Image 1 (cartoon, protein in one colour):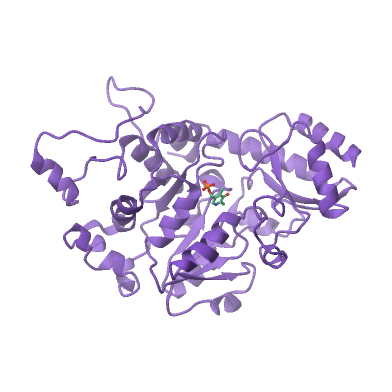
Image 2: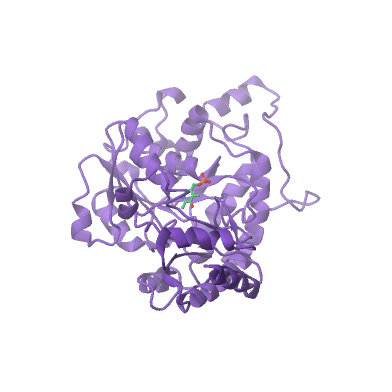
Length: 423
Ligand SMILES: *Cc1c(COP(=O)(O)O)cnc(C)c1O
């Protein structure tokens, strides 16, 4: 099936007489006829459902759809994008491990890596993702266990050179994890370019209507953990909490997701509720149509802003003169996303005045949903960062992040026009 068809049909195929739409299995638990059958599930000797913290049929169907859309072997849902990135990394890192991450990532992930995981003894070196391979190689240490970046960074809309990062990760014997939230599998398949694990905040375009916080992890199944067994003992040595099973031996290409589900989810419990997974399933059915319109509208607005004399700069990878346009043409040939960043002449003060004058576009701590919204990262999402950290993350103090929705683009441009007239 092609991507568009997968959006509609992957993950859930009803049999004769079954519900056309995926049912919500709103049940914490599942019934068994014999004690022995249930025991086998706890030993990972049989597959089946027993408690929704570990697995639920609604969630599994949605995870399977996302895995198919990304071209991976297995996937899982998490309660949020934050949980997805934490689980994706913590599944292969422990105290004493080290991560190499792009510095231009989402503020929440920057804090997760730079503050909270640091407290767990997991160190992170942030790198400028545009450096040469030789320069980037200097960030690696003997205890490096993963490389992390975003296909299109939030909020600076920089495009990651995925092949370059995959080469770097693999030449150091570690996997590349790519957060594909902004591009979605409609516009980019990071696995095709060498990424080993893909994560999502499904809260954004996948849900698409700003109704449910959620996350997802997809494993390509391509990284051979057993080749680097000494680095990944969690996957390659016995798990005493499951009577000594070795994930790589027992589950092969499913080792990574099985461990994340049966061990991390069991112990940390960041599940997506089946009801939210159901909403997500409905969002995914129209993802291909919505992404196309988000990109069309965003390009029209980026062009309008580029020609506006009150605008200091515009960053949108699909603009021919954008510094990421050549990477966008390679990795995002059908369009990047609906998010763009721009600055207004007069800096921070004028930017805030402008934002407050908008009528249709609303100020919201959100991005990538059906309704146009915007945010000033330096005063909102990245407020905790010092001026120095802002610059390191490439977030200019005057940067406005505009998330272009699905409205008629002329209405959106009219709204921008009237706000410009007020400043
Ligand atoms: C929003 C976002 C996250 C965090 O996701 P939540 O669902 O808000 O927890 C992670 N990565 C990117 C790129 C995001 O945009």
